[in-house]
Image 1: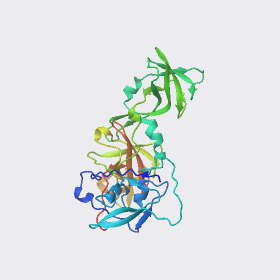
Image 2: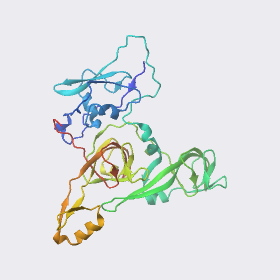
Image 3: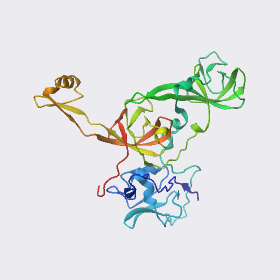
Image 4: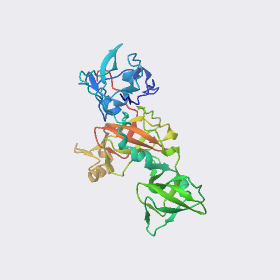
Length: 367
């Protein structure tokens, strides 16, 4: 019988140090089940959403539970039953007992992940944000063995620089340049992996054979050595992000205007700001500013011409700042120096660039 490894590291500090007294208070969602049988294809987030308002707080359900010797392990088909220990909800594992001699067959590698890794796999490998000046200094693709402008797997390209034979490298094209919305601070250059290769001949111009391809490689692309920075962990321990300075949605992963559940976004904070994989942010949009003219009719900023006209005559108008609105949650899965990549896990409204990111608020008792 094959075990499934559930990546639920029981960090006691799931909700970080902030609000330690509240960290042990778990609010179950209305209509939650009393038990759940783990199925193939389940993720940590999906399972936890059956029980909790805040799925990222799942590990708290396993806390201090003597009935589970190793809470990191569950089995396909195991029944997770909800009980209360000292007034707090806890999950216990009860294997399903079948009366018929039916076996359970699990293919290798069917571990239950925190999230669906297929959604983020391209971004784990292909996207990086680096210093633009540094990127311009990296070895340049001069051309290839064919006259084509674009080169694919199996072909050889030529790179400006002496490279060690056998070295594994990646070729990157320029993406977007990022800057912080509030201050205009430069946050780095997005670079996107086009292919990987291995050096076959070294000299002032080195030869590299393309071993895999995500898109066509062309002259002008830059070469970067493949190292551990591109081999990031794929299991995440969710925890509340600790925001010390305002953070915002910087861009969408694929450059679209509006984003929703399971879309990838860039965050304008990174490792230098203390962001780590697994950090969960609440997504909030500031409320609109409304002008109340002398006729008493509220005019939102979306009615731009009328709004601007009233604002120019502000002595006869009153302005109101409407409350901000919660739009969802995102979880960071990849961190760079000044930026991060996150996956929108919950969205009640569409998400846009410049939406604000805050520490998730734990629900009050009785909510």
